[in-house]
Image (cartoon, rainbow, N blue to C red):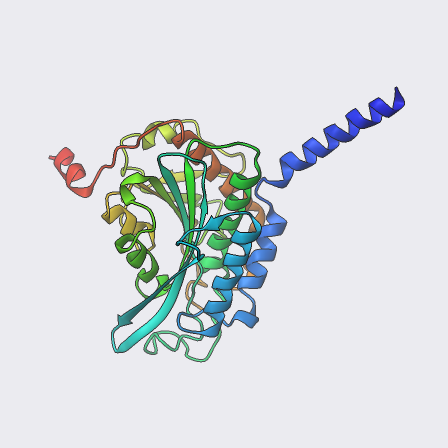
Length: 315
């Protein structure tokens, strides 16, 4: 009897522990950002060794989580681009696929690159100084990896596939998402929606978190209706356009959601360091994001709303 009681108790403890393990974790977020925003990676610059190290790190995390390579037999999608007087710059997207045997796929993304040592920015930022980019956008990559963990370990087979993408070259003009949407590894017509996380690590209680893309699908108001997370408040913005990777998906007629905690004094400066990260609040933001994703999966289809339609409605 005691043995059976022990087994029951142990099973309960294990089940509870397991259930909590796949939830967004502040300590894991802190650890991920701590690595990506360390001086060792020297700001994860495009066309720099630190950027390559960051992309390798993300690919390794995708593989360990059990994601399939998202570009044929590779986790990488290499590309080159030109920017102003800089030619044949190289970067790559990191892509992992969770195949649930569904007809449609949800894309979740966050760019891993930052300014590096600012060599490619024509003196706009202090050249030679490391810009670690803890919030921009190591925080988004940490969020991406937490959502990978959630959807691979929550014990449920979701009614949608997931494509997780960590974009390269975002700081150079949204290059990674521009390349992907022009060379998609899955048909964009099969994409349910795209969720983008860029700078989600500096939650400001007075501002709250901004969520863009609210007007890009007819169903978003219903999806958002009951979504709330204690300790976090948010406001919405309708536009699907913006200075981050969701923009290119919106321009290819994909509904989008954009999570962003807002500007701060360390934006694009060498002082955007891990010590200023608000990992606990980021974990709560991710829980809110999971609610939105879960609510959106209740709809077999989201109906895209473009800028033209919104302009017509204003008349």
